[in-house]
Amino acid sequence: MQGLLDMANMTLHLPEDSLLQPAWDYIQRHHETSVRSPLFPVFLSVSTYILLVAAYTTLDLLAPSWPWLNRYRLHQDRHIARASICKTLGLTTYNHLVFIFPAAVAQWLWRPPIPLPQKAPTLTEFLTGVLACTVIFDFQYYFWHMLHHRVGWLYRTFHAVHHQYNEPFSLVTQYLSGWELFSVGFWTTANPVILQCHCLTTWAFMVFNVWVSTEDHCGYDFPWAMHNIVPFGLWGGVPKHDAHHQRPGTNFAPFFSHWDWLGGTAYDPSPILSFKDKNKNKET
Image 1 (cartoon, rainbow, N blue to C red):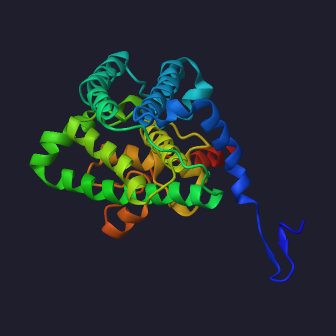
Image 2 (tube, one colour):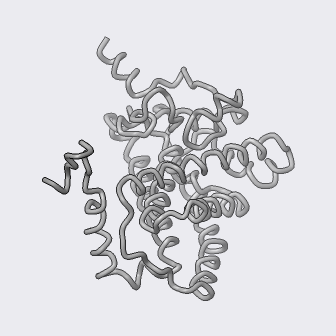
């Protein structure tokens, strides 16, 4: 009890160091060689994306025959064609083989194994690190995205391929040009380095980034989606990014809403009912 409560200063000391340290000790004891490899962050990001896309694509194939699932789709009367799945999967595979795999091999050959710190980050450092990386990424991509819409040559050359689908689904997340894939990957890798994040924080940010990016494109308004969890409309999420694919001059920010509010590019997709609105209508 004395370690938790400093009676002299009347302050409560939560044992933050102990929350992540056991997990970090386990990783170092049993998986040190694997996580020190320069290939590990690439493996983590790619495997997370594959798992998420596999799950969402399965839902896309089941939704037409499962009404209880289809009711969560933003566009309930238009289903994902198998030809679209094959086309987006083809470009995604091409990008991974031509761009991601050679870059990963180059890192493996030329970059030494990553040193692992003995101490895990505190819970506060872990959470604020993930949040800070996400906020900075959101800022970077907002301006990159807006520039590639406002400058015609940039849009036609690099970004137009992503807008071939005005009703996105999960595989559209990485239906990108090589330049856009490089830009997103560079910021995802560089931001934790700039902020000097613990490698555990870095890996968590990479997984979170892939997760919310895929969710933005999935086309489902699930009750656990980020835009239904984060209050006050601060998170754009699935409806606003879906609206961006239909009104490309709006909603440039990938995650948060504040840059679009400040930049005058926000668009509220009011015709598309949110999960909460659907429930209200159902009750009435």
